[in-house]
Length: 394
Image (cartoon, rainbow, N blue to C red):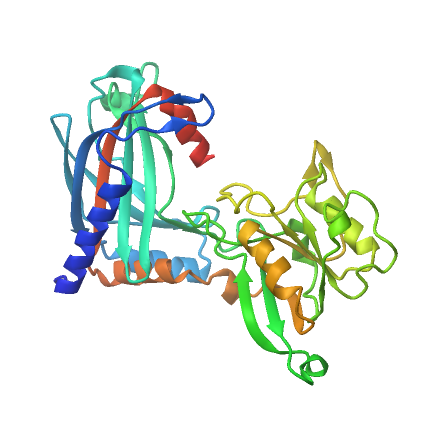
């Protein structure tokens, strides 16, 4: 269970990357308040190898078995000295029927006096090193006033206590209330492939894993896809003069094809999809022309509500892609007469419990009790930065 030299070298690279990304005294411009809300004063910068207890295997088994009881496991502690207080952090890994399978910073054992009062916050950043890269989570801690709270919370009076946090990983077996996984496949056809219904797969994206920390997922599914079926392998049609779908399309403008539309124009996703459906589309791809997709923790898909109204559910599947994917669709694939696309809908139990490679590695190593290398950064920040941080977690 000792770390190999190669792992130690990669751990050093992890620390260097975190140091460069978040240097001591860094300053951040609050986009809401439009003011400088730094500096970030570094309180602790350390690294450690942690192991999980034997309950980690039970957590993973409970997730795959869709168990009803909640199971939790904890890592060994990471010793910390913050503001003159000797304290500790650890990681937790848990599964619950409603919250899913998750890994987070466990702050319950982190006891540190908020010497600066309510105007000071602590931002804790943790990076975990895995074979395929790194995973990051954060916790924002603020001074806790226990006045009027139950006796069990009185020891926390005046201490830093968790106010908001992100996950290292989070996977729910219902795909975040979607109960399906959507895929988008792009194929290039050779002669005869169209008749056989397949071709060379050149691009394949999935709406699973919807809660990546870096927001790099390029596909979001629609809530109404749950009751629909996959499209066939069909052409993509993009009509540039009405790509926002503000006006009705001519009859059969998308007949037997997947419509490529642009997000915006004061129309909801369901409205755009219905307009394409009325013109004969069998599916709809909506691309964001301004930005990449954000990390939607609470709204992982395209909904039916827009501008305070609940819209009728379209009868064709739809997906949302980011700016880069939209530009690629418009420039690379639509120019080719051999390009075909398929929107897939997968409701299988196996797929809904599929873990991303990074999380699969995390869970397997935790279950075996293997050491895992983590880097920890704790910074004191000003109160004016609270609004931005809260926005990151909402």
